[in-house]
Length: 316
Ligand code: UDP
Ligand code: MG
Image (cartoon, rainbow, N blue to C red; front, side, top):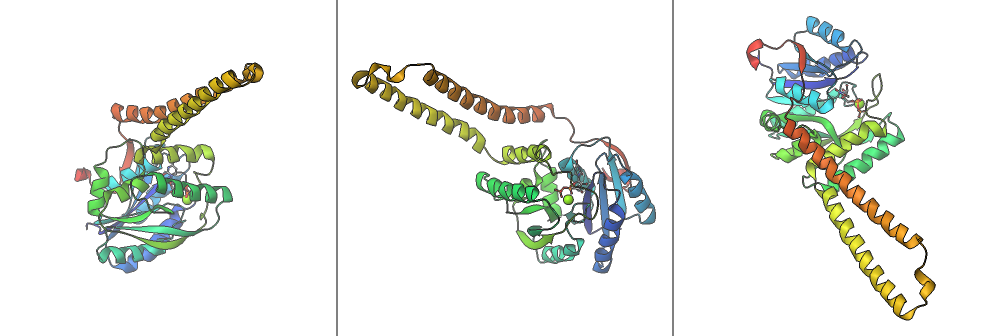
């Protein structure tokens, strides 16, 4: 039977949480009286996640799965999940149970009321480091300010999407994907419901250091904003203005001041370093966009599937 609700979960080294995830999802979905499926996307895990996924599928064929040929990343895993999900509504959630499955029935109720996207808004985050909390807070506010799309604050990927939203997302071929922006971009009727983000059930976060979070933030900004490019322009204007003032000051000093006032190499050095810095920053910013254009032009597939189970062959 075709499922009404699909739950898509990206999985990267989550062997300790998968069984619990399945149990909790069953507990909330079985009383719902709607056919459902759980689509697990193994993003090249190097632990036993794939084996556990198989085991769950053998127990319950509603737990479908696919494995990537290597680790492609969160956004790619979610995209593959959306592509393979069959439901009229698709719920996205993390494997680690930080997003409580108990919220899914509420999302479904809102969807039944006619909303196309129901997203979870994090009011509280438990069991996360202060570093993660602060960077997340700053990130959501910055991205909200500088993007043209209205990206809701403190909203992760935990959300329900109607089939037509999923279709729209799948029509976006971009390589550097930022789903938290792509979904609001689609439009239709969207609504948020508040929830408390729990601590991880087991295992550890894959996005906790600056090195792990920065590429995500850069993708977010470059995919939805030209602001950094405009910053280069502003910097150009500012340094041009400064130099104009400096020229005037130099002329005045020359005419009315004493001769020694502008001697030495320091002034030249400062000016050269300042301009060099501004130019390098601008180049770097252009480079960020250029690299992404290059990714698009190459047109490589987003991900490669190694194996899948539970899907009909003629689905694609
Ligand atoms: N994940 C993934 N590929 C990756 C990194 C993470 O599929 O390269 C999955 C991971 O298994 C989890 C979800 O993305 O289901 C969110 O990751 P995590 O909980 O580590 O991030 P956090 O909640 O700490 O931001
Ligand atoms: Mg998590």
